[in-house]
Length: 266
Image 1 (cartoon, one colour):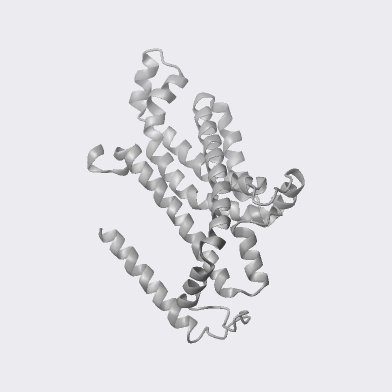
Image 2: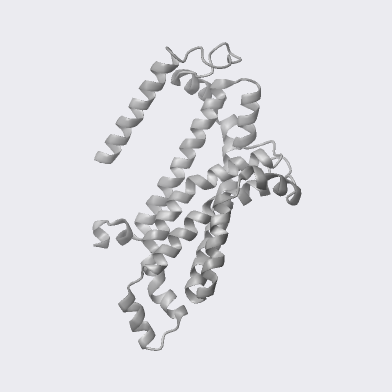
């Protein structure tokens, strides 16, 4: 409860500072908005514009980007966990998997974007963009691979030795000991990866030649100098990312209460 109160107080403080700066020293900074305001609107303008745009604007755009993010999130995490598990069975794969994870994390989006445009055809209007799904999966891959590997390696050595003493193979060590030990680390990685998936989907829409979604909505608002709408879309995207993080965290508490440190798991 105290954590929620602190978070609420922090958010209120940030909004107050934003409002104060937008109406004083930053009022005339940057380009003028199409509605006559400045480039940094106060929260009231942003909220009123978002309310005026309503579900008819945000619904189709956010829902499509969310679909792309979910598909990429599920696919990228499944591949990451499967490869991390394979490393525990075939140790020679660790170098390859680790290098693949590092490459996926370090490769610039601007470098891979043109290649994706060539390899993946643009979708029909309102359909899922392959570039968005790919980037959503790529942005979660590194986090989940690292978290899964750390968790799988953290299994109790005495328990692993006991399984081996009874003739158990590396596969049996994985299924009977390592996976259970890795659950806390995997859940943490999945929480961190949720906002990254939404970000990847938005970036993929920038590259994928789509006309519906958060990405093109941001581009259109920016190009037409609808600055309050641009801020509103950005804030909604942030809230959706935060919601994804909280949902995965909540699922983790119910799926593995011992990993979250709750009383039920003690």
